[in-house]
Amino acid sequence: MKKRAGATAANIDEYGRAKNAMVQKILAAGGLTDADRASIDANQVPSHAEVPRWQPGSIGLPHLPLRACRGVKRQPRRDASSEREPARLIAYAGVVHLGLIAIVVREYDPAISFFLDVLGFELVEDSAARTNDGRAKRWVVVRPPGAATGLLLARADGEDQAAIVGKQAAGRVGFFLHVEDFDAAYARMASAGVQFLTAPRTEAYGHVAVFVDIAGNKWDLIGPAS
Image 1 (cartoon, rainbow, N blue to C red):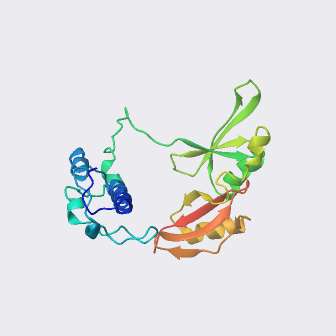
Image 2: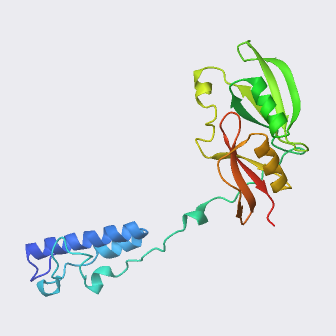
């Protein structure tokens, strides 16, 4: 950096700090090109009369002479979403659907009775099976009539699984049962002893009430909007 006549050491230091602060702010806004940096480095220090009266700690950058800013280009802000790669379509061979969702329960038979006798689900399978380490278990699948996705009723195996019975969604609604006749389904379930946590209400998407299953998981009973 060249020193011009009339510029004191204090003025040079103050101007240097101001210019560095300006450059850092521009870098944060989008960066400088090599040509920009060369242009800034080529500027001479202004004379004493040109040094801005700026005190450290003041808000904002000092007003720098136009010559010191020549060549500095503010880069436009980039939208992060515009830099994402376009979604890639994954081709499957044939039809794809969600087959089973596991619900951890304390015991098989009470859970089967709840889903069949209270909710009116169908028993798809109840067969003998083995755990990965060879211990006996049951493979129990239930599902709503006519549905493609079923529920695997899995008995808790060990302390870790027992600890999440009824807490698979961490206290929020984690399952959604859609019915065509909301009033009839609500009345039948209530008379069968289902515990509803909320009274029926109407939302933009339909009628809804929250209930809990035998394990303690929260469900939405949802019917179509009127």
